[in-house]
Image (cartoon, rainbow, N blue to C red; front, side, top):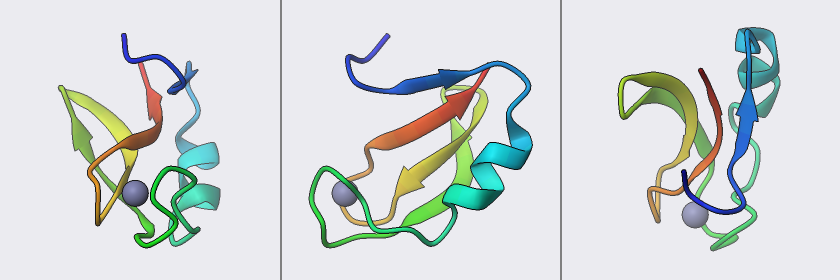
Length: 55
Ligand SMILES: [Zn+2]
């Protein structure tokens, strides 16, 4: 597990609220909903860091 990544159980609705928000890591990209390591996640379009993922 990557440190700092929010793990959400059953949080698809939470991911939708994160979509389009500014990345807190690089502050350049925005979060996009995509698959990350087999889970649904909100992933930065610039640095690729998942801000949150559902597992
Ligand atoms: Zn980023």
